[in-house]
Length: 134
Image (cartoon, rainbow, N blue to C red; front, side, top):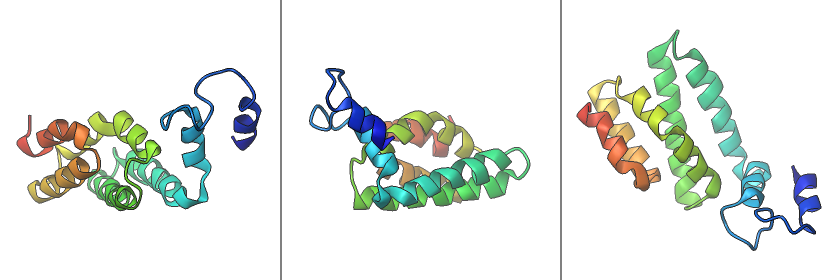
């Protein structure tokens, strides 16, 4: 990934240079390879492998795993607000998260809706559907 970034710095192609924008391919790769965000990568593994991959077999356990992943993302968001990789994650996973947690017990619904709205306020209307059941 770093080799690609290095190669594209001398091209005229848009979306590869850090100074063009804070939301482009450069920053996606930077966030994914930066050692400071290792916890994000580990959390994504946990979300997909230990959460989504076992959802059909152990729904409650998978949902709890995903919930703990959201707590870790909330912590990362507080440490690094507006981290581009978090924005991309929630853009991609918002509807999936709503579907997962609408089946949760009431107390869990309230807690996760609050966490998700805190980390991803742009989709807080969708997250309200978790607790309202709509």
